[in-house]
Length: 207
Ligand SMILES: N[C@@H](CCC(=O)N[C@@H](CS)C(=O)NCC(=O)O)C(=O)O
Image (cartoon, rainbow, N blue to C red; front, side, top):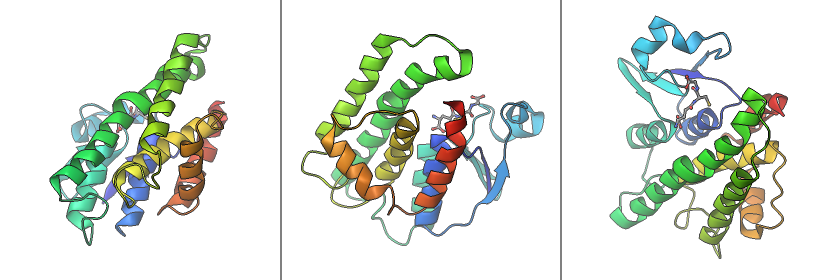
């Protein structure tokens, strides 16, 4: 299975951890975004949206990290624990995945990417929004060990990748004790956590 990626990218790290969790070997295709490799016709043929991560399983090409995570679990998982069949349990996992994509990761990107990629000044309103996103996660985690339900799911792996990026950026978690506790528990135990850490090392060079 070919996997187009860059190590520092949180969405790529989330997929790599999920692949580990279901014991799937990825054929790593490092994609140099700075050199525009993702804009080459052969890549755009695989993914017209030209984003990494992109997975190619036989002739089937898929992008959007959370869609890839779900595909890997549904196709290769030994059971449904990472992405439960039960409609309400699955709905909560989906809610957290959409929360990550639309709020937690998005607000990180809105605050940091103009600064690190366009050397723009920090926007204090975006910092507040980013902190509010982490506060929401802190509330979801009240009295819980996992972000959705009572066991590890793809939502934990997606949010672990995002929160690891927050840590790389020097985010102060002490005001968010439930997030801190969840992160401390999962960052050295999640399947593929070593890959996540190595990717974070690569991401550090932007800060
Ligand atoms: N929502 C997407 C985000 C993917 C994304 O934005 N990837 C970035 C790298 S982290 C990228 O490929 N940027 C190049 C581009 O958009 O042309 C996902 O979760 O997979």
